[in-house]
Amino acid sequence: MSLASMVQYALFLVVVVLLVRPVGIYLLRVFTGQKTILDRVLRPVERLIYRLAGIDAERQMNGKQYAIAFLLFSLVGTLLLYAILRLQSTLPGAPNRAYLTTPMTPDLAFNTAVSFSTTTTWQAYAGETTMSYLSQMVGLTAQNFLAGAAGLAVGVAFIRGFAGHRTVHLGSFWVDLVRALLWVMLPVSLIGSVFLIWQGVPMNFQPYIHLTTLDGAPQIIAQGPVAALSFIEELGTNGGGFLNANAAHPYQNPTPLTNFAEMLAIVVLPAALTYTFGRMINRQREGWLLFWVMVVMQVICNRAATWRVRRHASASGDQCSALSRPRTAPQGPPTPATIATRPWGVWCRSPICCSARWFLVDWAPGCTASSSWRCSAYSSQA
Image 1 (spheres, rainbow, N blue to C red):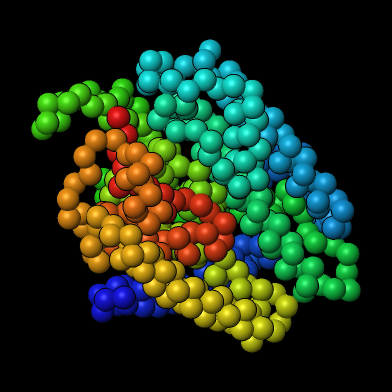
Image 2: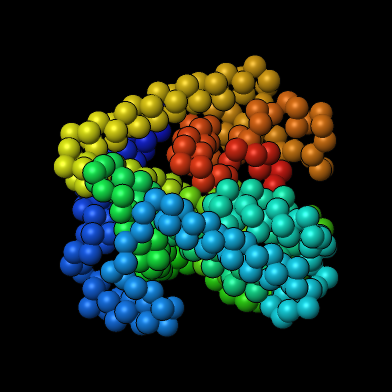
């Protein structure tokens, strides 16, 4: 690992450590009903949602009731997303039907609906050739918010179970869900998405662009509201990308700053919850112990993964140098022979150490928003 890579990694860890306490305190205030900076704007919205949905904010739930509410919410979300995907061909919002070459079959729709509603977000499709803009925004992006907020609510209920071991009450799932959405997911995603747009991530509903490359070959470049989905997929540790190459695509991750911000979005809530955990159980040392165990494991695994990828690259005579810059451009489409000579997933736009770093930051909380761990040197979309 070069000095520059070590400095970048150290800076990332320092920023995470500095954010753990303030974000952890903010989460504590949000989920214990204490005053926050957003209350003046969001409290009226919260009360309106409770009134319209018939939610009693004072009613506590035991573990069984909380679990049933969570499962029912996930089931309804799954069925609604499945319906949107199955009706996609009859609904408006497609850039051009000719681009959507992958049929939305019942099994693919069910796989996607279950995956997104559980934040597994396993993708068995290429977004730009399968999903309409309506499906991406109303279906997948909305489910990223809802499933991410539900997961955060369950995490807080789990902490309450530790903190209140002499009581059966874990709070209200519906209250936790609403507060996770209004106070955490929506405001942070709004700021993050605007940042991505500033850095060059598209946010439009334009048709795909037809152009001719310098070699004279025709090419189609996908468009769409990419920024709306890209940040929440990391913040909610969902992982499902707008485009097939996910965060390896320059439309989703165009600059070193977006790469840094997206990695930060993946880990900031899980890391801060360790501080929230310590405060809620009144044993802060245990919260910090949990956090530092995670940091040590991350550092060890990062070093091991970087060494392993570099060793494989050297042994296979990979086309990318130590800085992951191609020595000779690959000619023609990928073949089993050309793919076999590459370490799986090394991205020639990013150093090997960055590939390993993203993999560990991304997969540790189960996000899977792949930035480079795929054969993404060949992943430019036609």
